[in-house]
Image (cartoon, rainbow, N blue to C red; front, side, top):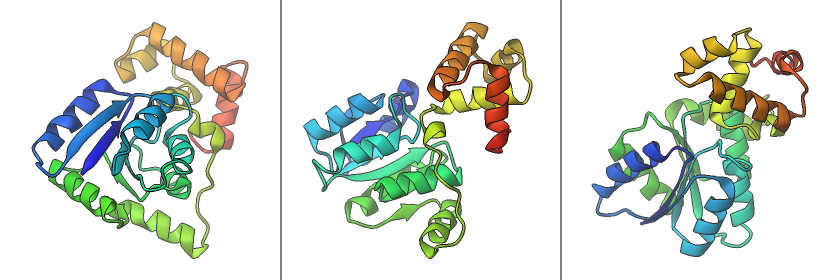
Amino acid sequence: MTVVLVDDHAMFRTGVRAELAQAPSVDVVGEAADTAEAVAVVLRTKPEVVLLDVHLPGGGGAEVIRQVHPKEPGVRFLALSVSDAAEDVIGTIRAGARGYVTKSITGDDLVSAIGRVADGDAVFSPRLAGFVLDAFAGTEAPSVDDDLDRLTQREREVLRLIARGYAYKEIAKELFISVKTVETHVSAVLRKLQLSNRYELTRWATDRRLV
């Protein structure tokens, strides 16, 4: 099975590639770190399965699916994300992914999931399946927030801590990053959400119950 690996963390891609290298049935034919690069790599290599992180710079995993599907409908997408939030699961499946598993999955189970998706099956981590069943059953399911989907996973983490009243130094210590990096993430969040300051950001996060 040919696979393209899409994730904005190089160390994570290296780890996944090492796990998949132990499976003779899987051949990683490409990698990408952001939305635009992912679309280009997938269209060039035409893999059977794309392992796709949900939160990517440049629009997110759902945007990758939306751009690729019309041109290569045979490519199947399996979300592999640290997020187990209902809105992420539902948004990604609505975009066209065939499955969604979290990064706590074992190497053997990931290989199995890739195979099942390549064969046309739908694959979900057990806890996440309920979100999808609820959505298709017409019961109340979390709506997809396009604004929130523009943020990377790290930007969401910074957003939540800012909204909880953390100072930049406290956020840096909590996330093991520099204060300068915190400032960069906050600036990116404000720009993407079209907000002016941390007080508007806090109100935005509170209104969406992200705090």
